[in-house]
Every structure is written in C-alpha cells, then in structure tokens.
Image 1 (cartoon, one colour):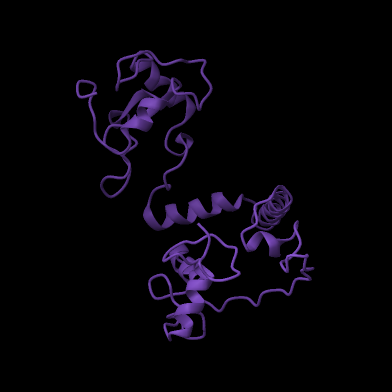
Image 2 (image 1 turned 90 degrees about the vertical axis):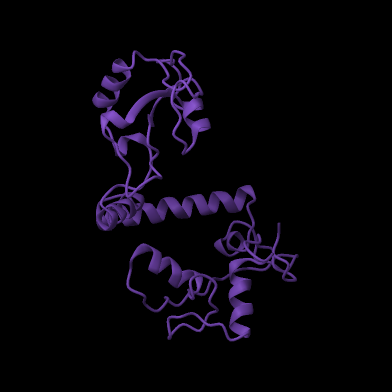
Length: 221
C-alpha cells in the first residue's frame, strides 16, 4: 500500500503514511524529535526515525549529517531517473534501481571492511552481544560448531524429535526434510537463549519452522 500523501510514491508504514511523511506531519503539528537540535517530527519513542535508530543501536545521540546534494535528473514523470539512489529512495524497485542499490551496498560493505576489518553485520551483532551477553538470534553457527552439531544428530539417531521421522542428511540446508537443531525451550523465552546440549534436539527444518516458539514434545506433536 502506498503512502496516502499526494505525489508520494513510497510504501506506507503506519497510519497509511510513510515515515518521512509522518515526520513532516508531526513536525507541522509541533510534535518534534526529543533530541533538541533536531527539528524533525517524532514518530518512534519521542524521536525521529534516524535518532531512534541511533538509540536502538546504543549509540550516543548526535546531529544528523547533512545530506549530500545529488544531481538527480528528472524524467518525464517529474521524478528522478531510474538507476539512481534518489529514485530508489522514493520507493522504486525496478531492476535498474535495485541493481544500483545492490552495487551501492556492496561498495559500502567493502569500505566498512577495509576500515574496520569485519563485515558490518558482524560488527552489529558483536555490539548486541556485548550489550546483552549473547549473540542475537541468527543461523546455527552462532551457537554451536559443526562437530558439536554432528554429535547431537548422532545422539538422536538422525531422527526428528518432533515428528519421529528420519531426517535427510543429503538434503539442501533449506529443504523441509533437512536436519536442524531445535531449542526445546525456545530462544525467545527467558533472559537469553539456552544453547546447551540438553536443550537441543534434532528436527526437520519444516517441523522446526511449524513449531515456532512453542514448547512441544514428541508425544504432543
């Protein structure tokens, strides 16, 4: 669904408005970002979207950098031409704009790795671990090594502990019958996920996905 603001091509987020249009509306109504130097409208926790992102990352709130002026050539429709960040940023997802954005992301990642020596996602996840004491939920390599994973599959006889059927050792990792490790007590429960062997069991990827964040035994399944 598109933003209801006239001539705005962005997708709506809340209240049938995109975030920039919600910021503009709240700014006009006097609801300003809680960071005093910022004159943008507040839309999340009393902050604009950019300062809310800084707060969520745990960074100290600071003034936003001045946006670079881009030579955005206008097309016949009055909007920036395809294949530019200006066109992508207003919601265009055509192959040309999508490829431009992909190339831009690759270049940004390369710059971050050259400066900091790690992938930006790894840096973000490390910050979360430092703040919370455990890795944010992600692929299984975060909580158990391949040899340990293999040992747990062997312990369970390569049998899904949710449906009782055998898992397929040769299936692609994203196949419904591929083996995964299911958390008996789900990761979303408690203060942090329990990755101990006693809380892990073999499960089909499909069964694991259907279980979700519920605690289900083989008998209940």
